Length: 235
Ligand code: ATP
Image (cartoon, rainbow, N blue to C red; front, side, top):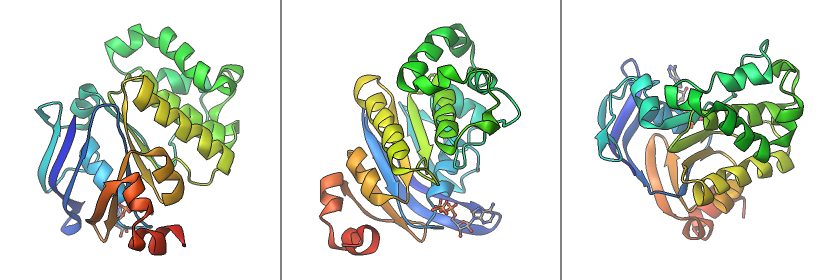
């Protein structure tokens, strides 16, 4: 479904990622792993059009998206939950969720989508009229994920969903991500520094170091890889 080839991107003249290659199949969760500053967010920003790539190919279901506007990429069905959630904290939970319905199709299905999200995150239904800024970090992450789901993604990108959250909340979010891929036809890219949790959720992973993919494989292969064990799993 998604094939990223030789993707190069950076900021101004500063190139951050070099010849990044990876693919995501239908119904798959893939993990993009690496430490602080490795280039993970830059990679997803280049895919979603938040950052104009320098060169490369981002083929999504046969459509070339490299260099297209973020709106065109959203319309193609790639929706990102940004690092740090980026909610409108003064607005209510409901208003934030409603903003996810950016297309006609999503607006038509809004009520159905809300029910779908409340099934996964029942706490949000109890807090629809509460301002988003007063929610706990975990609840805010749930709003951010639900807002993305309301946009009817075919590919959902979660950028560091575990950041600053308690382990049980992270597990809840990752379980939802897994369920989206396996039972709801939404493939998932999980960008994570928590390599242990990411590999437990994902089918396969790509390790980025200094802007390069230095390792890739199934989650089991990466869990048993000596470099991954030493550098990321502390084993
Ligand atoms: P983190 O887990 O900290 O988010 P990351 O792997 O996602 O790390 P990136 O955010 O992609 O890393 O950053 C990669 C490099 O790009 C870093 O050295 C960072 O300082 C640099 N960088 C990020 N954003 C900008 C920007 N807007 N302008 C210039 N350099 C940037």
